[in-house]
Length: 332
Image (cartoon, rainbow, N blue to C red):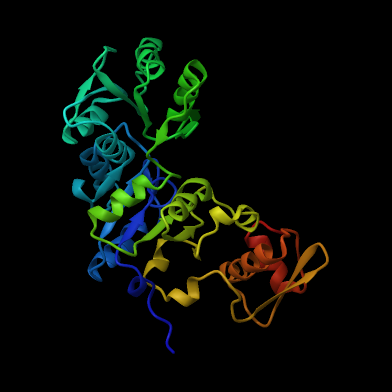
């Protein structure tokens, strides 16, 4: 039986952004061309981001500025997912206290709810998303309504926000402040929870979409929470060592170096034994040997299957080819 194309198994591609399509202001090599090829093959694309501070139009404009074709309708944000959660939990037209940007307030309004900025007895819910302008006064207003029993939805719980200056406080840091002040837990809409991926899949009319991302703790775990298959790429923060040690909820079905794999064969990308590589368990470690193979990512696919099965991440080379591949993967 022939190996089907990856896109023959999946009716949409749900792409993470930072670390998968770009690094801040720099496009990742081959990303734009790979996404264009997916479109040419007729597979819908959605750009899925935990960022609730920008509108879909602004995200699409940023992508176009990096050479990636994108329209606002193809962008799914955690603000949209949060607004949908609110619509499911409170009455139409109800007041929602917004802690976040005007882009978040616009999504609340688009969901048929009434965004406000000050606490009052008629506020039915609080929605919280990242904004660099959030101050103590904003948290104080939210605290009052959350303590009074209002529904509390957080766009995401990311503790940090990657910037060109380094990691800075993210929405999760502000959520933690309100958690400490109220003793409550919010409903989270973004990764690694399922609502954001479900919103993206529905917008594409997809029943079996493929989630693609670099972070195991957000992209891959979120895909698992939504019951979707995931492809992990090695262009961002995810590392070979992290993949070997991944908990069951953070294990992708597929693995690739970058987005160029999207037009490849599904069987070649699945984690599992690969031709030319042999991995055996020797007590507390794995020994990798080559039968003439050189592809380091193929070795990693083989190693992941063995590490997950045997519960060990210690690897040693059994020959020079394996040693070179392990060094390339940072596993030497």
